Image (tube, rainbow, N blue to C red; front, side, top):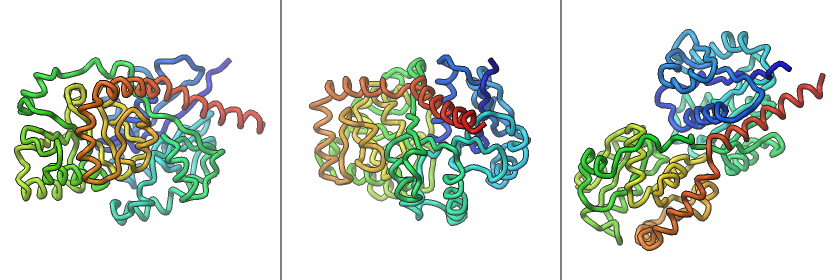
Length: 378
């Protein structure tokens, strides 16, 4: 019996995309680790195979004629090169939240989040106009819609009237070998000059909704354990649109000796930071999933996060979920120190529910549904 063929459209996966790319990459890793009867081929920007050799080793990767660094380039390629080369596939999986108007209609659409519906001010006017024009139509035309959390299911239903029967949660999952690369605690302290005191980590790009300023306000307030002059806060992430505002706050409040901003760090250093930190603090205003909280749990790092977006759903009772209130977070850091052993254990158990293999199994069920619908229609 011939294998069923799936084309995964990753033309939007350009450097700097971040968590949405990682979500799909980890699903591919999961697909390569479990048995199934699908042949999955990847359609991606030029240079993708060099950036992701682990995917190129296990899948056929078709690279586009260019790097797709401009949205206009991607759109043209989706309506021409991609449409032509995927017309015979059993399923075309569009991973970037939109579907081209031309091409194979047996589609699975992945929607990571629709933050722009709640925080339009955080999106450029050009991008906002594009999303308003393309997302509603894509949601209508998609055969099935995959989302990372029940929170996103509810958001799409409320904002766009999408039927829950059309959507399914495909969980985010961590690779089996994610902990093979890890910098030692001593190595981390020496490399980032953290001293001997407590360390808090926030691995996030400095975009406004990530809410770095909230954490800086806690440091400046001198409340509870945040007043400890030996405490170090590490912002491990690329520069985003709020970078200048964050740097200005640090300078104005003389926090430069307590806050480190090394930018995006290697996987080994990210893992090492999580493994040695007193806690990972995650005050984001909006998340479709929030993979860093699961990564922290995997490495035994207690989590303090906001009660916004999907975070309460993802964290469950395995971390401390707090409203974005200075007093609540002041108390939370003290509570983590008392409950550390309990939180480490429950976090590790929670992380077992989010593996790349389980994510891939969720995804395969959606492929099966689309293929079954096609056969029923013949």
